[in-house]
Structures are given as structure tokens and as C-alpha cells.
Length: 76
Image 1 (tube, rainbow, N blue to C red):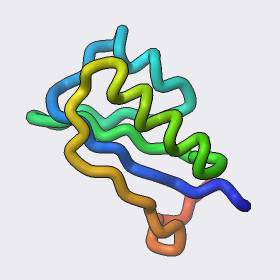
Image 2: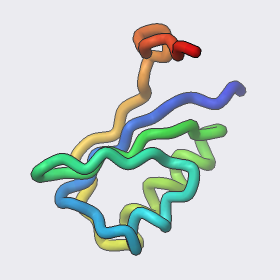
Image 3: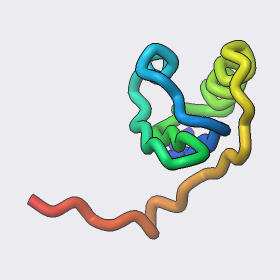
Image 4: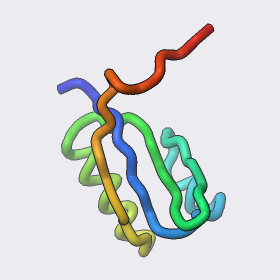
């Protein structure tokens, strides 16, 4: 199984201390939520991220798999 990109939206603006718990994920802080995005290796890793969100007491708003074909191409 090839890794897939996911976005996890959690309610609120996460502090650096909490963001450091999600190593390897990019964080986008919005006014009312934080979007964590990155690659997830497999279904077990996906469940691990969801468990981490729950164990930190964060409110999960949305999780979705990002279609990589729709991502903008990187430019050099």
C-alpha cells in the first residue's frame, strides 16, 4: 500500500507544544481551526494519528484523504 496524503482539521488554534506532537505534518493555523496535513503510511498509521488527536483532547472536525492529482505541482 502506497502512502496517502491526509488533512486533519481540529477545532481551535494549536500551540507549538501541541503541534510538536505531530512530527512530519504541516500545520496551517486558521482563525477557528488548525489543519494538519501530511502523508500517512497505511491504515494503522491513520488510526494512530486519530488516537493521538483523541489522547490530546482535541476536537476533530474533519479528516479527509487528499487527491494528489489535484495538488499544485511543485516548481523549482
